[in-house]
Image 1 (cartoon, rainbow, N blue to C red):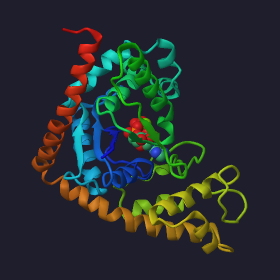
Image 2: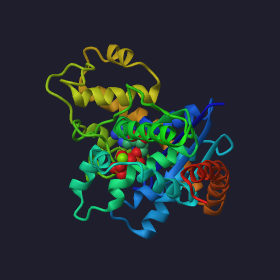
Image 3: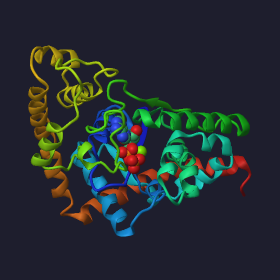
Image 4: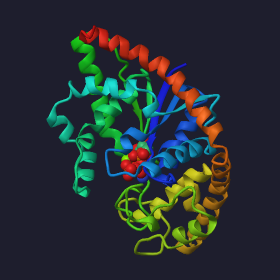
Length: 327
Ligand code: ATP
Ligand code: MG
């Protein structure tokens, strides 16, 4: 079976619809056809300001949401990044093969450092850790959103560079970025990606939002000039974003939805989409809360995941250490 690896940061109490549609739904699909490794990136979460109690809670909450959204611990290896020490160990090696120029060109670094008063060195070296997260498992496929394309490109470069310099070691992975859903936009600001770190809870649909909050956010989504419901991301970014969300939550094509709403108003679309969102996300929310009631069980799943992941990651790390001359 081909292998897949991906992760989500533990940077909020709830994942949002961008994570759900852009990443998690793909994770669930690929666990059927791949040897799947999905992790909660708590080490990446400390590259920006964080609170220890919050991080601990968010790590478990993220794990619960993985499972509630459909990841099956029997099919997917679910683990916490910091529980597999090979990640930071390989990261150091990769940092030493990454140039300052490459790291500082990353747009995520530029965006996030502009928002921080204190810019940590970890924010700059983030992509080397991400490359390690991936390359340790030699996956063929890495499902991510559009915003991670540049980091994936760097990962591929680092893999090729290492292979060239020290002999074939890493599989050069392919990014899996689905054109239609790779970037879900903020409902209040359809020019920006929906984000955990965006200080705009009104524009972000959290998958743990209750029915009332979901409905309110969708109904107050910014729409565009004109009245026609059409898929035109350039001129109608607000409505197009709603159509993308509608389509991915129902598995109906955008064309099909547009045809249904011909002659109707934005309000109709919003009311129906709110209903679809409530229907889809309520069970995920309920299951998440249920899973969080038995934290020992959740922790046991993660411990088992870390053990499975470590076995593979350590074998890769040993090979790397040997090749670079560590005794
Ligand atoms: P943060 O703001 O803390 O970086 P985030 O919302 O970007 O959080 P991440 O944990 O960094 O979430 O990303 C997890 C996965 O979700 C990645 O694969 C990322 O590409 C994807 N993703 C994040 N936001 C979106 C979005 N708006 N649309 C589609 N995919 C997204
Ligand atoms: Mg992010």
